[in-house]
Image (tube, rainbow, N blue to C red; front, top):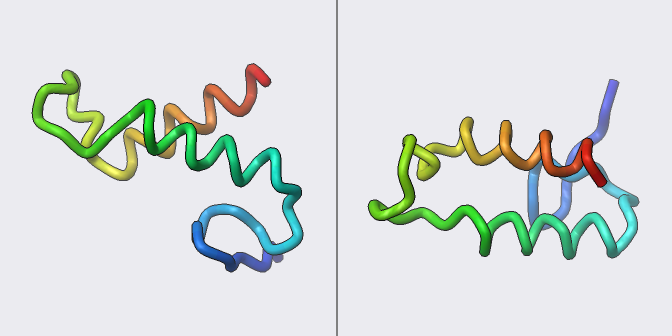
Length: 57
């Protein structure tokens, strides 16, 4: 079982600061706005994209 918490509910407690900065970067890169195509304003899409980018890093 994974214990979640902190400012981003999808980042586990105890994760280092680099991942938290990546979370802030994700929010900046995929903003909640109408001019970003393919429904990236939906949380599910943002988390899918974040998971993909995190996997690359």
